[in-house]
Image (cartoon, rainbow, N blue to C red):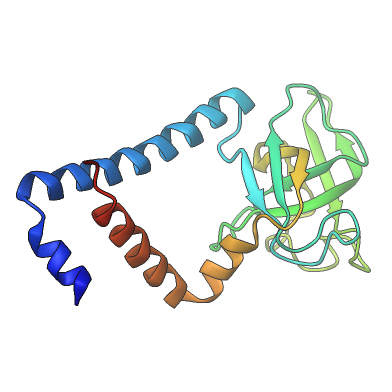
Length: 180
């Protein structure tokens, strides 16, 4: 009841100011994301590990930092790629185990999760008829990570109700944190 009374005491100007503060927070986050994309030369500078396929190198929920290298990718590098023809568009984090290079220096990669028994071709992760990951499907190469920080993202995706609750709490926080 007290929060409803406090809400009714806010003037239109105060509500507009809080709405603008919220928009400023969202736009700042988007600018940081785009800035990181430019600096790292990749469309997705940060990804979250969603499965146990790279254990022990990475655990589920680890936050990975990526760059798109201008130099060729080497065997042993951990890359993030999107599968050609798959609708989900979820990037896969796996290690390069074999490289095939054509005459025009085009690289084709064979990948495998460290914890998986077979490579991604045999494991069925590649698209139908696909034998290699083309260099243009590589989103980035892993340069660093923060353990378990991405669990928040996983929880928000697995429990949709948490998204709504978080938005409501953030909205109320912004609305009631007025400056005197």
